[in-house]
Amino acid sequence: MKNWYIVITGENYDELVKWWEDKVGDGRGTYRAPNIDEYLMSKNPKDNSCYWSKSDTERHGLEWQQQYELITLEQFRQITNSNKMKHPEKWYIVATKENHTELNAWRKTVAGDFHSNFSIGHSLLSKHPGDDSYYYGGSVDRLRSDSLYNDYQEITLEQFRQITNSKPMSETTPIQISRQLLNEYYEAATGPQKEYLSEHFKLNGWTTIGAIRGLYDIACDGWKPKIKANHPDCFEPESKEFDFGSYVANNSNILKAGAGEKLGLCNDFIQVRVDRDSNYHHKGFWLDNKYNWELITDNENEIVLVPTKK
Image (cartoon, rainbow, N blue to C red):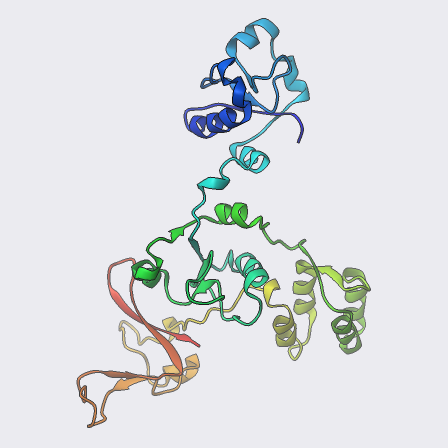
């Protein structure tokens, strides 16, 4: 964008004027700083001030606006890269169902596939202090209480995109699969599925995230898990948590008999410690090590024991 302008407000004043001071440089002795309600601009058509003052409006009017585009503060930041230095050097962002695919796509560019267990609820890191995984595998509460991460600051998704030059992934985001994999899909496809492949996949393997998801929707039950496994970044990750909601006895907080097995947990996933050699014999619970276990303080300040799949 060659010609742009933005209205200076009380909220954006400091950020805009900082850019103006860096931009005008030696000209600061010639021009006063711009004021609130004036326009910061890529270039003043009359001089080198890079803003349009109220006196400019009185003398010359606002005809220049026909050749200039009004931008938002976010566009200003993208165009000028003005707040690049404001981002923390060490940062983290919590993976959610909505942002996991986007975060993990960037993580894979720096960490590779070796560390592949980055899941919803984990925190993506600017850099892990102990390895090259680029994420923290515990809860965000545990991260915040871990002294190793005292100097890490939480960032927003927008900040993440600015720092990493990442773009939001959507149905139309292009991706390329191997020709071998495309042939594999085609050879196993039914007539309608072959028509879909011909319409949405190019011979060199280029397609979109939406097309992969569409292929999954029309695939038979035997191929659905294969497609998900081949293209994990095209799908929302499945939660590793267990949902006990349907297995609690009526008007009670006690699990029904056999609920663990129905949930995919072994029946003895939690039980009283009965080993007489244990110093906690009949004093505590034994937790099956097939699962990850974590004590978390929830939003109602209650301590909750949460099992998740490994």
